[in-house]
Image 1 (tube, rainbow, N blue to C red):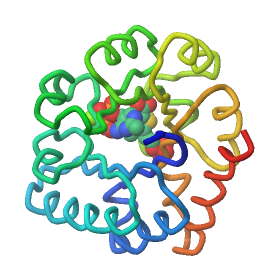
Image 2 (image 1 turned 90 degrees about the vertical axis):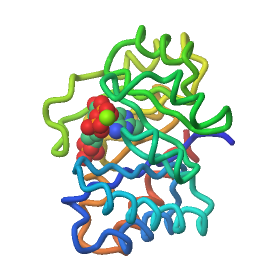
Image 3 (image 1 turned 180 degrees about the vertical axis):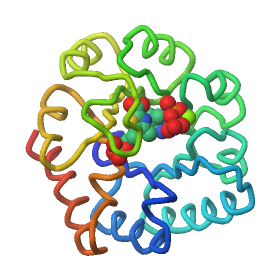
Image 4 (image 1 turned 60 degrees about the horizontal axis):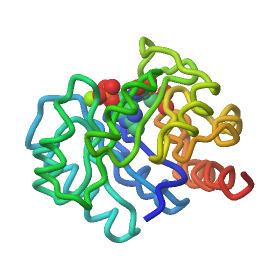
Length: 208
Ligand SMILES: Cc1ncc(COP(=O)(O)OP(=O)(O)O)c(N)n1
Ligand SMILES: Cc1nc(C(=O)O)sc1CCOP(=O)(O)O
Ligand SMILES: [Mg+2]
């Protein structure tokens, strides 16, 4: 499967009280990958919500990725996204199997991406590209990095951090295969607006 398009990421605070309707609205507009990102320690809620997302994703034929937690991903038979402090990729690959999607945070460092590729990552994620409400302190990346990564890394390239419909187009032009978005997608006033935004993000790939 070609990993290209919108990568929607959930946020438990932003989606409080509208979690499933907003996620379904995004799926309705078209989502290549959906990441369940919940930074709480509430294991039973995490399991319950991740199971609901797995059912929803199955209906929409979207791939589900669990942030941080390879054990939960293994339990659900889905993919995982691991940051630099979330544990090594190689055991996660062994646990999840060769077909699982495993993503790796590489900040603004090509060396991290090359290492992730050697260790069996399915895609590499660079960011943050713009100011992010969700993660203001993340290290900054720029479009030149995408061009270098395009030439050196033979894996799908994901861009993240402060991405909105107003600033996303150059990222695709400079080589991003996946646009990972929280606020720019789910910070909308209605489910209809979430669907519209998802469609508009996907349209950027159709025209690139
Ligand atoms: C697609 C994608 N890219 C980067 C991240 C960030 O991962 P990490 O650095 O582990 O930070 P947290 O998201 O865990 O706070 C991501 N989750 N997804
Ligand atoms: C989770 C995350 N990781 C980042 C990184 O740079 O690695 S930026 C980020 C937040 C993405 O949310 P938003 O689209 O609301 O900015
Ligand atoms: Mg993490």
